[in-house]
Every structure is written in structure tokens, then in C-alpha cells.
Image 1 (tube, rainbow, N blue to C red):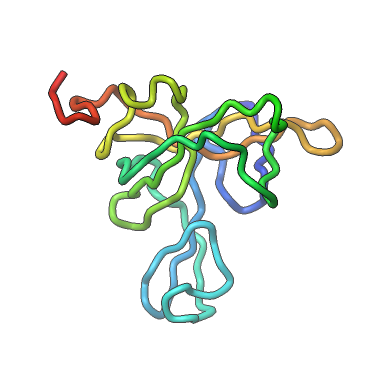
Image 2 (spheres, helix red, strand yellow):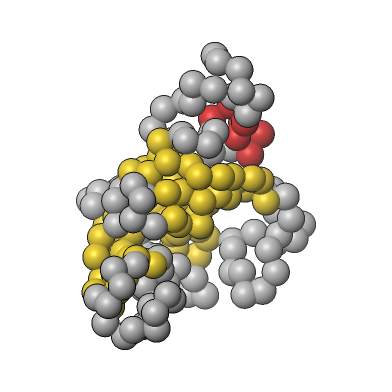
Length: 156
């Protein structure tokens, strides 16, 4: 099994070459779940946080395309001259929490491959190299199948 070197420690556990489980933090005081894991709860400020694997499968809650290179502290593999954009969104992980994420689909095909409610799975995807030249990866969500409705609401 090939392993990924995550862009930051503690974001996920590796299940197979690109299949991952994101790691969230569950608050022992109010039961809310956050991703990524925080030292204190964002709802009640409790420090009683337990790390747990989040569901691998979720549904697109909303999405858009990112047509400009993000500003610092973004540390992506592209430069301003070769930036091509990407698809981003929020994925609802079975009501446990929502995760802001890249969606692993070509930007040009996003409208036919993704819609609100599309089932997606957590995967790791290449994300350039670190300063020493080692391959890095980030998390993303990939559609399990093609959606049955388009953005205009017509059925395929």
C-alpha cells in the first residue's frame, strides 16, 4: 500500500493508496464534532476533545469553483502563472459535521459531475512537494457516481 505524506499531521488516517478517513475532534462536553481537530471546542470551549475517524462517505452540501490562486498562507504546488483553478465545497458527513474541501473533479466538468446531494468519498490527492522534494498530498472528496440532476434542476 502506497502511503501519502499529508500536508499537515493529524488530518487523516490512510486506508489504501488513496482511500482515507479524516480525523475529527468530538467534544466530551457538548458532543459537537470539528474538522480539523482543535484543542478546544468551537461551541463550548471545553478542552475535553477525543479524536475519532469521520465517515468516509458524505454528500455535497454546496460547491463552487476557485478561479484565482488563494493568498498566503496557501501553500499549493502551483505558481500564479500556472494556476488552473479547482472545485471546492462543503461536504456533509452524515450529519456528524461539514467539511470544507476540494472536490476531485475537473473544473470544466464540475457542473455535470457534481450537484448538491452528490455522494462523495474521502480520498488523498497529490499536492506538490515539500521543501526537500518529497511528494505531498491533501484530502479531497470524489463523487461516487454521476448526479441524477444538473445544476439547472433537469433530470438526465
